[in-house]
Length: 388
Image (cartoon, rainbow, N blue to C red; front, side, top):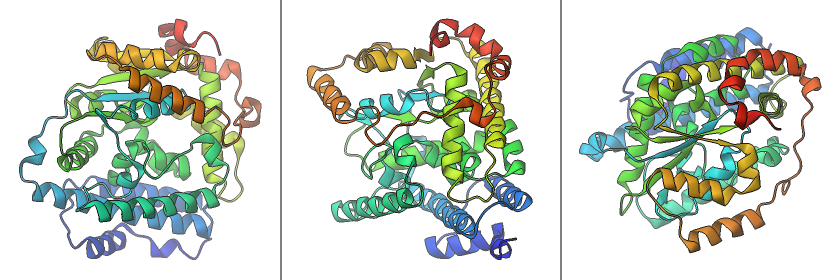
């Protein structure tokens, strides 16, 4: 058993984070339960290495600090909590369904606002350009440190310090995130997250977006992205005042296999005695549960809030997909914007940082098992997932 287990408790982490942030205004306190379940789940499994426990402690402190910083910034901006968030474009879908490509392309339009990695690591506006540059440099160092520990992850999800990051990073500040499920094998936490209704957590997520936008010289359209929204579409729609949700689709066997490989890559750096078949079961169960919840929301919310696209369409003509997104929100792409998208695509070909072709059998995944778990989804979106 790791000697680092006794060091981690919710109370000690919160006390230390409050000292660092100079505040103890936590807001809604449900996050304490989620953090305790994460810690308890990791203790229950006892599979983390000492490095894994150090990473968990560092991440927990960062997210606790960020929560306090967002609350303090909101108080300093007065009416920021009343600012509307209408008009956002949110990209989601099962993991590994083309969401990242679309997000990167939408981020190239200067009229759009995205969450940059350097902001995700400290989600409050910088005081000036010098602080902004310093934070970008720290984010670059943080990212290179992460890729040094998990080098193969760059081929799965390449990031830059100043480029777009998943907005799930803001949900991590409430410890309500698929990210923790992926990094840490914590059964108690997984059970909670799979059934949680995250209204308070999405309220804090929306507050962080408002705080960040308060530092902008002019309003822009938020373009956000995270696969973790799939299981919480109702809460997302309410928190963002009715965004357009771009739902990306891919044959489930390919998506779940790729997701399992992502989990294995992350945990391989922090966990002992990794079990590929256990990861395969988790990837399938989580993906199927999230999609079941998504189908239920979509059955009641109607089609106006959603635009469905397939990975096949994204691969064939991603610029055309962006045009379709813009048409749905009453906008038109410009020639300079389309040129920037094509230049980005030429400079970021598939496989630039290495190939990622996981094998379903290696994770114990079969066509029959995945098809059984996703039968309602396959029927509902047959035209979009019918071809790999």
